[in-house]
Amino acid sequence: MSVSGIMETTQYLTFKLSDEVFAVDISKVREVLDFTSVTKVPRTPDFMRGVINLRGSVVPVVDMRLKFGMSETEKTVNTCIIIVEISLDNETTILGALADSVQEVIDLEPDQIEPAPRIGTRLKTEFIKGMGKKDDHFIMILDIDKIFSSEELAMVQGAKDKP
Image (cartoon, rainbow, N blue to C red):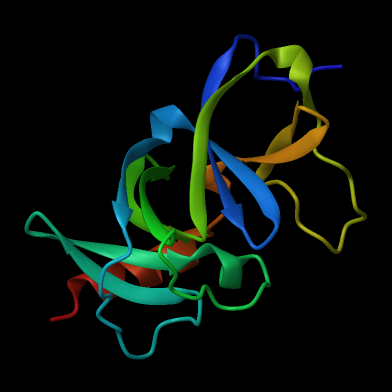
């Protein structure tokens, strides 16, 4: 049984947070950067690590591990920032997503993707588009547009506008 909305082979960028492998639609990814110094912005949520200067533009950086309830990302030689485009309320926000490491770009056929598990009503899983299967491993396919609420994105946008 394939996931509704995924009708064709799609390319995904896979990345690791702790021991888990996640994937995001490659069309949402602008580029991948080496981890660089992040300027902390006061009075922002914990998962908001700060901002970086990307060719003259201020780009907010979020720690995906903290967003998903894991421990803070530690800087290693593999730590990177995935620059993604998020669409919410007809607006596009450019965001840096901190990841432990980027793995590879993979093609997944619709029949390799299972629907996201339903885990009761207390756990929100609408940001998981589906569970990809590759070589007996599960890959959580993220719907990057649904990870952050409009309030969180407003905070992130506010951080970008602070001097």
